Image (tube, rainbow, N blue to C red):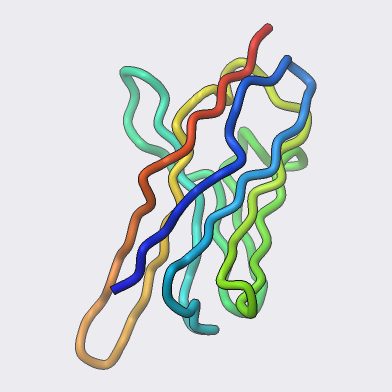
Length: 119
């Protein structure tokens, strides 16, 4: 069982920056895919960014060039650096771990951290 705990959210003015962290209680394996998702009020949860063990990353178009996902397996931590924040980035941000084994797939979620961007 893996528990994920996000931190780093808060209130920031448009154009500002925040760095989100996601600490896993257990070990993050090289083969785990990690991701950040967000959910704004009244909207469905959407994928923001993902990163593989090898460091390959993908982003939703709306954050490309502004957000950067990274991971430190030794620290069991995944990060999301958010620059140039916009009011439309306001949402609860969730960390996700996607693990495949021979037997089954495991998918874990954190409780989320609120990001509010004021105009």
